[in-house]
Image 1 (spheres, each protein chain N blue to C red):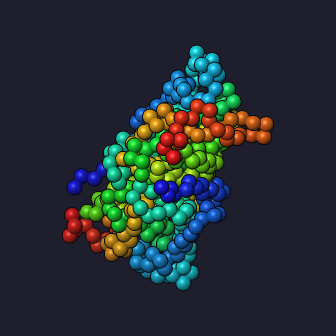
Image 2: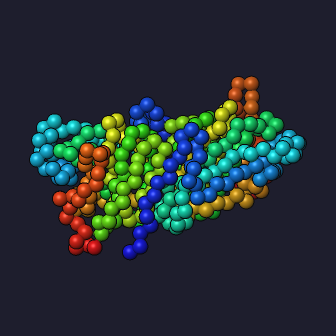
Image 3: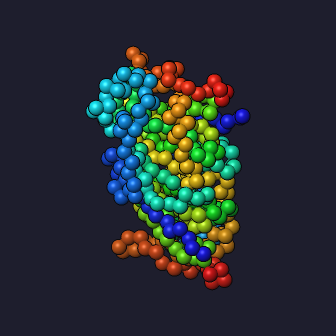
Length: 196
Length: 196
């Protein structure tokens, strides 16, 4: 029998990068165009086009049932209008697949949503192990002043559905407030009603 | 549709415990009786019966395909004869299930073995993400002077097969040496030959 060989990926604890990553994806504001609620603020920053986050993939593992994939994400601090920097967010293409996030540094929220638009937000920080159960769309949001860094582990056959979030958005967004981050309805949300 | 609700388990970064764990398993020497190579040294310490490790289970998650389980393990430093403290080690009952270990503190080895007795050892330390592919039995070994602490994430339907390791052992063991830990053949190994 041919066995897939064990391996170790070393996370640089000073910045969350994986120096020997097999792939690094960088997402700039243009890659999230249309996802921030304040479209004027979004447009105004497109020239600068700031880096929002990078994902370091630990290894080339077969995308098959039984395997797991893992990566680190480094999400920068900042806002577009009063909305915090965030990841694109996705459902899994195999929607019955879960994901585990383990916080390494910084502070933020893991925003989750059912296909019907019901929201759940969990805190992210070093030592927080946040569980995204099957079927929940998920997005990370940096509400702090430093990078938000976390490890993600998920079934290798989960796949990504970015399209639903790109079309519908999340039902709520996370914005700055006088007493800290707060969740408010997303004026650009276009889901839920027909699917609820 | 009934969705399983998101949750967060907070790991105490000072000691690796999960203060709100839904279950804590403690393994003492008697629970590993017969697994250490030096049976005289093992017997001599059974009166004292030291605590070897504890596992903190983060949450009660359905043991179903698509979900993932996660826990922390705190493995004490020490030896039985010249063999380092270790976990029992197991294959998965669903042998095609993988596991991801993320090191939080201490230093050690993740010892893995195919059913035929081929060994692979990966380093464990803070920031090391060690991947146990499907089919590999796995055991953690504390080769340091402090607790070895790690997070484990695995498919919720993986299950445990402790019996094969209890009967056959690992083909190699990790012992102290003048130049540090070293792997040597396990004199009590009873597998491989017939299965290779």
